[in-house]
Length: 213
Length: 213
DNA sequence: TAGATTGTTAATCGATTAACAATC
DNA sequence: TAGATTGTTAATCGATTAACAATC
Image (cartoon, rainbow over all chains, first blue to last red; front, side, top):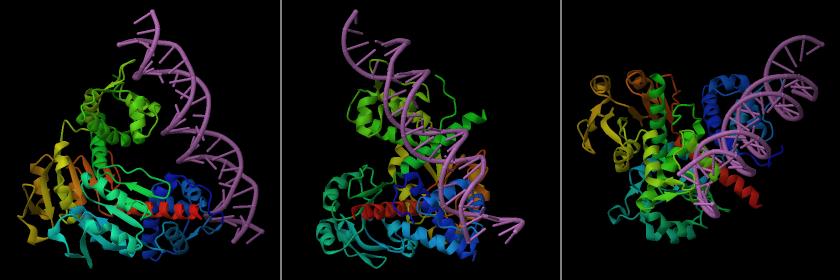
């Protein structure tokens, strides 16, 4: 298994989708699937599926296809799901709360270990079994706990304050704030811009309308 | 201005980012910018910027660069922001509420006109000036109002029920539910899978860790 | 005019698809 | 064994980058 050639980021971004579809198949009790069948289900080419999986060293068997459970587990591992990740959420507005309350994350190995906010009225309030702490406690907390991921769901303005405390103490940042955070050497970053996605949709609508005329 | 050649979707996905950066420049009172300066700011190549803008027919001037305000307005138009879009939200959990409460959407021409949920305890409750209505009212509402976008922030299970009512009555779906909705001829769709993004982050972390060893 | 910077064509790079030999 | 389907190489396609003539 040639595990560690450099894998392109477009491939990596496709893995969670495979993971979802395989999870559905597994739940339906389906034992094996060929790249052709999977390609029809997912609306991609069988060739792409085989290429993608082979970036990680071939999970199938000629003449048979792929064992769903085995493939699912392998992808889980690549995604770090079986190992598990601990995470904190900074910013307990609606978005932060919606992430904190999303039980599926836990199922997928993402464990909430801390909640932080600036609003004193919220200190001590418990969400999903975790008490909300003041942002000023962040530094202390990070030094005492092993935190893999910091989820940033606070306003743009607070990012400057929180970022230096976080950097060096986590392995990844899941950033929903409107301040883009650049990836660095020891730090993985996913910048999620929800409004970008809405504007993209609006743009698609506009181009669709014009096409109609 | 050769407005309507087919523009690739990677280009369209980059537009909101340009829009954000240009908005920042505008707010700072900067009047003109060259593709080179913008490229350094945004960490892309100047070539790509010029190619991207030229898909829509050239917004610059040789020897000068781009007028920030003009460019900003042109991109606003392409994104449908100046025209404006009306939208409803179906599912008023934390995620739905966080979108309903996000004031920047309004600034960008996205107008919330309806909120729907299944929970009778919420009927009539007002959020951002809009009363929550029963999902059973959806059909009626869509026939009486001009709705551009339906935002789906409800559980997977309710999608099957709501989708047929929505299709044909909106131009686009911003889908946060865990049921992938395929794009169709008259219907633009953006499927947002937040958990995919988190898993991608986790995957990047894993590969980073391995690299470290 | 000379200098700057675009718009645009050409070259390169990377990603996707097709094809097929290897093999279960 | 014959049939099926992978793993993998080769061909194609599309996106990015480089280069430069056009022009403000």
